[in-house]
Image (tube, rainbow, N blue to C red; front, side, top):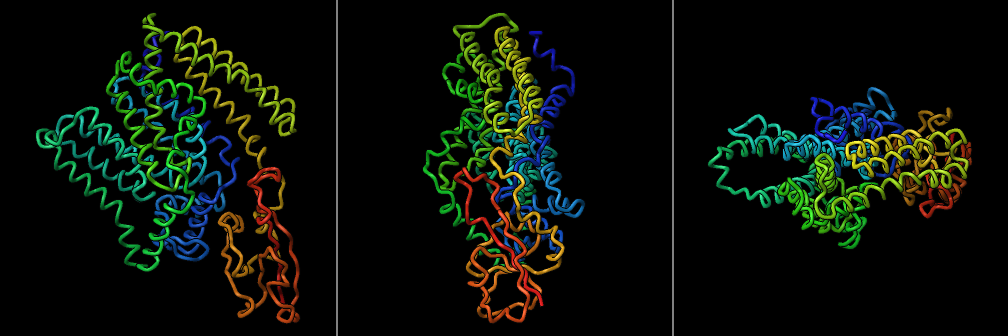
Length: 552
């Protein structure tokens, strides 16, 4: 079937394909990856918010903090009220936002190009990019703010491109911009909206005169007003309620931009690998003069290129750098790959490949097919040989991967681009079902005695937890024990028993013997807070802690 557009011409078919793909890449085994510090921070705030009922002032370990906007915390707090401690359900909402973001990208690209296949290809590339898969499986702020902002861009495009004032579209855009601001402050405005606006108005040569001629000025004003009202109300209320804490939190956030995870300006230039398997096609899509000569949607493709590199440059200006900050860049990256996939599909449909485009397709698609075909080798070395998966599991998963790789090569030879894209989606489905849980366990401590077992110890129930002033408490620990841990100087203040002390140094060096001579001192256990295996560099001896119970 070379008539690609006919395969997806029916209403709802592209959306259904993307939803099926997203279910596997965003939801299946979404509890396999252990929470990191950022996700734990959101979950701890949500747990405490559900406990204390204060929906305006988030807290961590009982202390008010405004370092992170509240919308994702509100969602997680609602989950805590319905199903306490359910990490899978928390992450399902993050996966839902990623699914919505994928559909928004499909609608945006299809609207710009008037082609469902370009939109479907862009959405499929986005949904199967490694960066997106990882972020969508973590309940934190990034996926929320960028999903809302992409929806705002889609509404803005409909309102601006269509005839008339279109107040409805502009109000929707303002509402989504406000929700994005409530999710992670101005991050998405800087990393997604601003690069898009620069690309759109420069490539399509939009001028300010159009605002007046096409009656767009007042709708745009309404959009800004709605966005400000929705986005700023919480910040105003938070400042009025706790001005000192609010200012301190803002100072901490700004300070972290320049001190936390500071990396060279060129750090993000390995961004091509963030789209995983598709990096081969993305590298090919960077040959701008070549594709400007052959593509039909020249301006749309060029707009995606400008959007991508403008966002990359703006991100590089910020001293703090983190791979997950590249999520908004993957939107135009996916569009670029979608354009060249559509071009090759059209060439196959017309049985005509201009210049050396057939060679370019063969090299890129066959290389990707070969990588998938030989993936069972790594499956054997990393998982089966290390006894992470049983023989039957290895055989089934390897057969599926080999079949997928063979079909990819077959589609490559026959120039069947639609089938090629579906094969890549099937590959990621297999990885999500059969491989992902084992990969997570490969780099993690299995059957470790971690702090998540503390809640199961009866003698620690309803007992207050303390630690020495000189010891730091990791946010992951707070998430696991699901209770506050108070810092205390035991040399000057001795709490009333019973209470538990979490410590790494010997208990005698923290509490003098004369203070506990009339009390019972019992070592409940030594716990390992490492999720990394000992041979990894991230395995830290300082993550071992002892819990000592002091009773009358």
